[in-house]
Structure formats: structure tokens, C-alpha cells
Image (tube, rainbow, N blue to C red; front, side, top):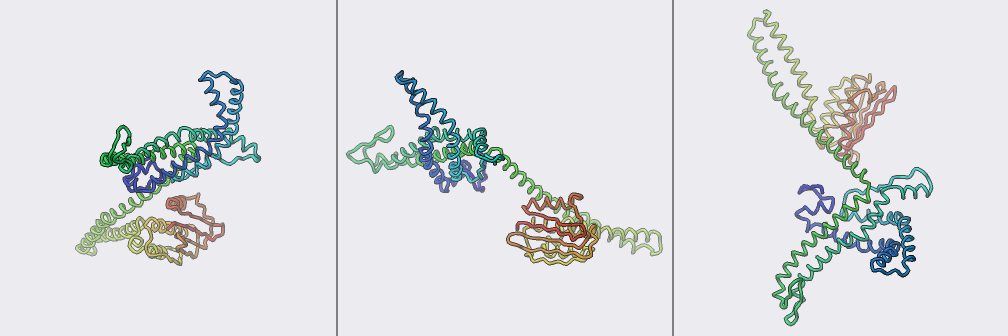
Length: 443
């Protein structure tokens, strides 16, 4: 059974049993409904199986008791019943499985996967052949047999415990001064003497609720293991874990970017500023026409150029405009710094969720970099807006087109980043242009 954190919402009855608030939640009532509804299902689905296997039961009973009269006729009917069970059983079990998959949702909120795929060949015979040759059909038949035999026995244990607990709770009302009643292994003759048993009945009633829920949870686990596609369930779990790991990697990547930006800004940049100031002071103290003054002046100019490059590097790692002013201002800054004239039309709130802002910014930054380097465009545009619950971004340029994401890692990396957030990305770039990069991010 999977462990569930105290704040996580349980998805199955077995997971909910470990919650402290189990008794005041809806799960005990779900378990009760699931257990009570199992009785009619057992009667409804067990009648055809009982009809097929009744001669076999009669045959076994006669052999055990030594009754040999008409034993041959009973044996013939038994064989006929077994053949009918094996022939019609899988088809009837499919009906049972269909209903049980729907009932499973009472105590299991996880998706249910049908274990049968589409049949490639048309006609009823390929469908019947697939039904009788796939292992899933016989697992369904095994579940149907258990539903009519062992599972009701489990629920009957919980039912008897609950009935006995109810008798104990009501014992002060059932006993009178002139009448003695039996409560389990003891007898009481006065209402006062029945009070301890009533208190014990309350405790037993609570325990029977847990017992019923435990049996219902085991029943649900058995139904899921026999009636669903185990491979698909495993694949879904693996895909979910892959998606979560990609999200964790993206979060770790963003955190590392911020750390590097902070270290460069507070460490290397500050030391470079100090070095530039010292070189400036040294240049003032030296004779203007000396060789030392010329060397210090050149070093001072190189330090100032290095400061500009470092500032641009820091801004590329974690843009200050994005962090302080939001996405609209950051996109305006990108457009102003592009070598190609860019018009910006952004109608989005100043602040959006940080992962969405960051991804949108780097999509536009990479797209405008490609426009400036490869497109030979004379103009470009950036459009961003909220459509429903999606942030839609479109970067257009009138360049030569022919962009192929497979020839570079920039667009591919951005597409992967967009996919982590559950978004989509399209690139339309016919030869001769124009090129359009469109991104939709859940927001």
C-alpha cells in the first residue's frame, strides 16, 4: 500500500485508512456502499454460474455420502455444466467485469484502464477468438468466481461484527428488570449492568467500521489487479514519475540559474567594480605621458568593457527586468536590444507564475536571437496575450524562413521546457518566410 502524506488527498480506500480523519470523512460511507452493493451483484451474477455448477455440486455430495443411485446421469449433467461454464463463462464474466469497473470508482479514484485493445480484423469471430484467447478474459472469470464465493464470506465477517456491536450498544434498551438477555458470553438482567457492554459495543462498532473498510479496500485492490490493464497502469505511473522528475529538474535548473546570477552579481561583479576604481585612481596618480599611465589606462578600459559583458551575462542568466518588473517590461527590453526592429504587443498581467514568466521570456529571447542571426529579416513582432487559461505568445519575422528545429538545440530545448509546464509549441517556417513561433502555456 502506498504511503500518503498527512496533507495529501487519498485516492484509494486503503490509503484513506491511514488518515486520522478517516471516520469523519466520506470514505467509511463509500466502503459501506461498496460492501452493501456487493450482495446484489453476487446474487445477480452468481445465478448463471450456480446453474452451470449445480450438477457438479450434486455429484460431489452424492460421492461423499455414498449415494450411487443415478450417479451416471448426474455425472453427465456435471460434465455438460462444466463445458457450459467454460464456454459461456468468459462472456458472462465480461459483463460482470464491466459493472465492477464502474463500482470500483466508489472506493478508488484512480483511472481504470480496460485491459482489451481494439481487434484489427473485422467480424464477430475475431472478437470472440480474442475474448477467449487473452489472459484478461480468464482473469475476469476468476474474479467473477471470487465475487460469488470468497468475497461475500469476507463481508459476512464484518457484517456479523457490526451486528453484534449493535446488539451490545442497544442492550440497555433491550433488557428489563424481569427479563435476562445474553450478550455474547455473559447474561445481563438490568439496564445498569448492560451499560459496560454498551460501551464495549461502541468500541466494537468503530472497529467493525475499520474492518469493513479494510475488507472493501482489499476487494477493490483485487478488482483492480484482475480487471484492469496492469501494464497500462504501470506505464501511467512511470509517465507520471517522468513528468514529475522533469518538473523537479526544471525547478532545480531555475534555482541554479538564480544562484549563479547572485554569485556573479554579488561576488565577481563587485570585485570587478573595485578593480576598475583602483585602476582609475592609479591612472590619476601617474604622469599622463608615461608608459605606466598608458598601460593602466588600457587595463582600465578593458575592465570597463568586461563589466559591460559581465552585466549582459548576468542579465541573460536571470533578467533583472523580469524579476523586478514582470513579463511585459522584460519583453520590451528584449525588443529594444534586438538588432532587428521589433514591435511588441503584450496584453498580459504584470505578474504571472514564475515558471510561466521565465519560460515565456526565454522563448522570446531565443526566437529574437535566431531572427537577428539567421533570418535576414527587416522587421519582427512579438505578440502575447491571455486566451482562456492559456498564455499565448507569437514571434513573427519576415525573413527568409526555412528554420528547422532539428538542426539546432535552441528551439528543441525550449520545446522541452514548454512541455514540462504542459504547454505546446509550434514553428512554421516555409522557405521564403515568414517564420512564426507560437507557444501556449497553461496559466
